[in-house]
Image (cartoon, rainbow, N blue to C red; front, side, top):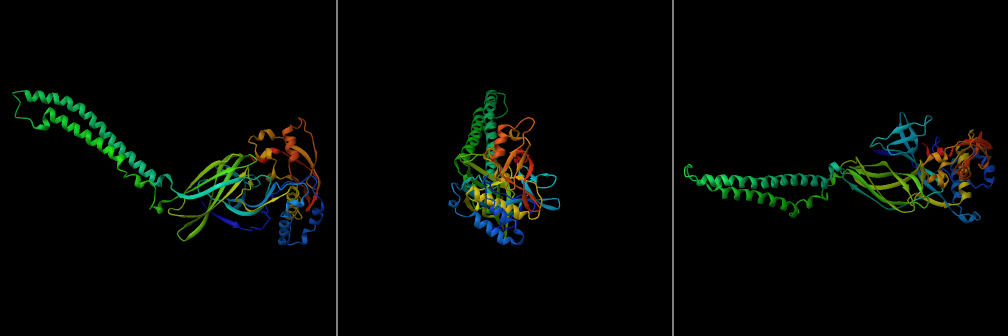
Length: 435
């Protein structure tokens, strides 16, 4: 359950070396000027490059002619999981499993109490969400909840008293039957000695009525005494808190089909402060705010809560929210320049194929729940600026849904020894879903 932060490079635009850069969309008319200067990265220091990226990306939106700042530059997290002997990047989180960024695309089950490791990373996205009313508080597990324990006790007592009432009611009927025999016995002149009052028919009925009255009175007093109300709030029992409850409202102007929330909370147990992390599937997020309540069990008994941070993912790609750190609005061109600089720097002297940028997938993919609609590999010609210049027709043709999505995608150009080059690559839009 307890997790740790690998590093906290809050100003860094560099993702882990085995992780694809998370970037914004490119304008089809992106200027090549930045690319030609970027080819001389070899003599630049990492800090110089990061400063250049930050300065350029944060230029006022008005510097981009006729463009609105529809993209968000923000600081998010890359999530990792211990797998065998390595700490491996997580490609996608699902309810009870994680898809890992390994050569075999391993899928591992997530057991309760297994936390993540994370690294802060600068990212760009064309979609964002809003989280309002975030509230975190200590809570109880069902087994340790004083209110539930009181309810269980009350239920047991109620059951016992109800049984007493039932037995007393049956006793009335039995006493009436026995009373007739007692009265007959009392009238028998040959009966040995006089009867005591309890042995008479009247005595039997009086005792049976008294037993019923006592049972009924006990049942009534249970509901009117208030003795249990004082035991239901858990106050005065801080050592029993062993769960964390997180509540918030979530919405997004652009629908998000498969939202997963990752919670990273700072807690204190004794003199030790540590971070714990867990995730929950939220499902579809729409413009209409929806209430989300998450309860995480397994906290150290009597812990103290200090802080909570929320991170949102959709099909493995992080979505910025109003709670994201260092969030800035930028334009299409600014996002495109950021993409290319980060890509070239991250893969200096490497040879790579062109590829799509899933973190800024078209809105139709972000809001889609059925991968089959987009499941078609298509060969694409991508120029050295990352622009789609030609789409090769398939034998069965290209459905309009697939064609439209491919035309809206952002691509990173192929690299030959670190230099961007034109190439042909096969892309299946359904790969966005990472199934």
